[in-house]
Length: 357
Image: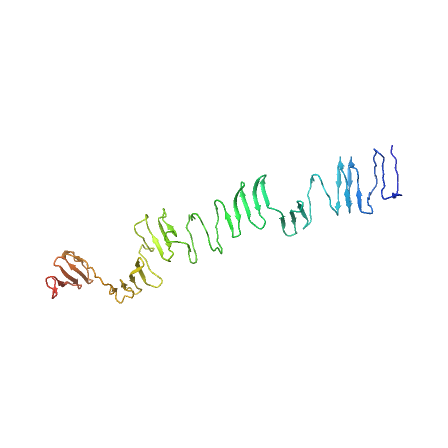
């Protein structure tokens, strides 16, 4: 049995509440518009709202607070436009079959204190964390990216940290492989604890390679297949080239295989220990013990003697240049003037010279 009541409005005679329905029954509303509005802007449903069939709500406008115990929809409900000015609280899961469209600068806030927020401001997209670390995981329990507040950013491979930013730069754990070109721009220092291997050589422009912190027992630059040869600078600013098992001597060669040695001032100095022993000036003058040689060979500052070559008459050299030697056949000091040998002095004829035929 059913009956219809058509009224324009229902106003309580006493109080502010209107009750419609019967005990254990139900109330069916058939109308174009249902408008629930109270003087306080609050509409309370003290029991369940049950929709057994198909419900189409073209426009649901909630300007205040709606409190329900249970909204049970057994069939299908189409909501073309739901406008919520206040707060909507869901105690269960929210399942969306379509898109969740949000306007620019509207945020998805997660956490009791809105700790994690996701939003787009019209130009850029943001994931903003305000409590603890921001952890991005490839799967449960496996870290991929850790972002620490006011600190480092860490990258992981299979839950093992491989890269970390620091206050002074970055730190790599393990090997760093570069398949392209690694360019250093405005790099002051490259600090390597281990060995740096350059398979195709090192091309350095500018002032070259600056190696500091080297002592006499430290190695600067190693050469050779076994690293036995090396160049280093001592604490006293002395540059040394050491050759060991790769060969018995050091070689300085030009493209033609000639020995080339020189200096920026044009003077070549050879020292033994800390003392200069030989000097060749830019004019080609040689000084042994003489800092400023005045002749082609200057040994005037030495107090010893000059040991001359010696040999028999049959061992005399040939050529046109003047020579001086000791002849062991006749025990005479002799020289060659370009034409013949002249005896300067002998143990047997100390007062004259004899023309040797």
